[in-house]
Amino acid sequence: MTSPGRIAFSVFGLDVMWYGIMIASAMTAAVGLAAFRAPSHELDRERILDLALWIVPVGAIGARLYYVLFHWQYYAVRPLEILNFRSGGLAIHGGLIAGIAIGIVLARRWKLDVPRHLDLAAPSIALGQAIGRWGNFFNSEAHGRPTDVPWAVIVDGVAVHPTFLYESIWCLFLCIALIAYERSGRKEFSGHIFLLYAALYSVERFFVEGLRTDSLMIGPLRQAQVLSAAVIALCIVVYRYVVKR
Image 1 (cartoon, one colour):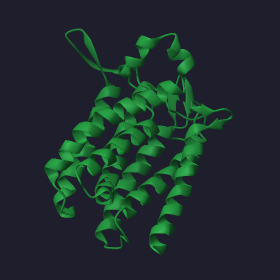
Image 2: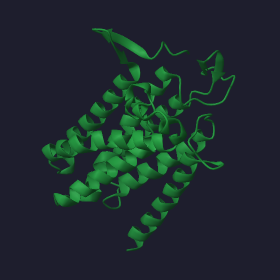
Image 3: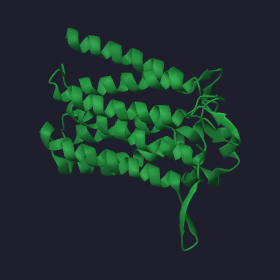
């Protein structure tokens, strides 16, 4: 499998990138799923859309700034490139941190139930990741090391692990599994679904990150693995604390 290229089509001389199409599709699907499910959670659909109007752009900015921070030597001498979203370069951890942070701030300001809204958002976030990861395929980025597996993708003439595909499949499964678990009635407390999302996504990301060749680094360590391990530990601590309480 080989990427058909970055450009989807051109309009009046302006190239429309597959990366942008996939990211926009991911955001639309995530917000749509949350709005669709809101009434079943006894949450205000209009308020969900209000939150999304802030979370989506702030999350995108956070994802870009996070990526730029770990490539600062490159962008320090090319500051205008920081605004070039079309070329790729969005770090999902940065988007999650920024998006969730602004969501919590607004929810508290509007006196909303934060844990219930996080539970509603968890499957939507996973769905958005499942779709958005395909932007990496079209950009021939975020791939793994060389391999001979039959589902490899070809990048620069070399067969490599399609790590974007591994994460896409896992996140789609995670979206479905979280909704099914929620409907089973086994949720123990508000915020439980979000904790499951954060822990299970981090488990996948920890192992898949080990296959990648373009990881953001903290010294000799892969940033995503360090953060994933920290999130897993935090989720376990919070879960045990809430259950005991």
